[in-house]
Length: 357
Image (cartoon, rainbow, N blue to C red; front, side, top):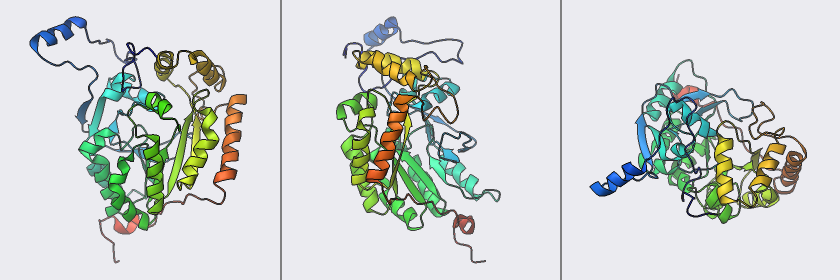
């Protein structure tokens, strides 16, 4: 790795031009020199939190590749900086780059809990699990400051509504008491992402995420407190973590996970270019091999948009991954079942308290 070229603490190493924007922007050297002479700091790697006020917060998910019907995102963008993240492309709709902007310009939906309450109190709404989140991590570093996810969990608890969580951050343990209360009525299911057991790989692949040790500990603590955990072994990237499948499955099973899910990496939209730039800087010796193997799983291209295939992959490499996953389930998850969440209580609590009649 060339340390002079590499931006530490970030996944993406460039700001790819927004495909919807007429203009492109860059931090010019003469501007930086002006700031230096004026004694002002121009930190181009600093994270910015930008408040926005959407009119709705719950999204219906229509993709057959995603195991959820409804999702909500308290934030847009994610400081975790996972280089492979499919959600990067969504930042372009907000006028930003899917590269570094996705990690450095975090949109904060401070009214999310109010919009959620309005939605699930609607007479037309019928309870179905709403997942936090589809296009961000609801426990990314911003949550430590803004506590929007925590406020939403209080709404779910008040109205006895089922909620799913997807995260790779141990900050979820801050809300353990809330999760335990939800679990009493089978209203919560947690998905913890564990992509590798190697800290070296984790640091370059997911630079601002919780350590692997802490993630496994999080699975254990949640499980010991009766909160069902599904481990997300995703994405599997040929040549980077594909050799870890069995060990990953064993590690999450040993810590109490009831099930696991996985995807084969796909580099849709702008992510192909961002990932290619990243891997040539971080793993130059194996970059071409990894890119070739990813393409081999998707009909010869990095970008695969075919519903039903794009997250599973195809070809002999993808088949090897699927076979290893099947073996892992037989070996480590026999007789384990992730429960279906309770959708029956909410109707009686639409006023925020149990209806007697």
